[in-house]
Image (tube, rainbow, N blue to C red; front, side):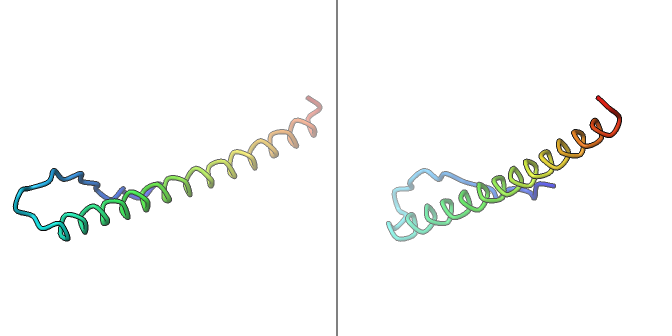
Length: 67
């Protein structure tokens, strides 16, 4: 099951926001985006593994029933 994704916000620069605060927000969003992508990649890898196992099982069963 895919875990809920972390919200990503792409803030527009506010005139009074210090550069450091703005950069910190951007860095946090980059980290959250990378975490989301890593989660999705892990789920895809797991699904590929499961599909491969199921294909092998189907092939084995077909061999047993003579198809």
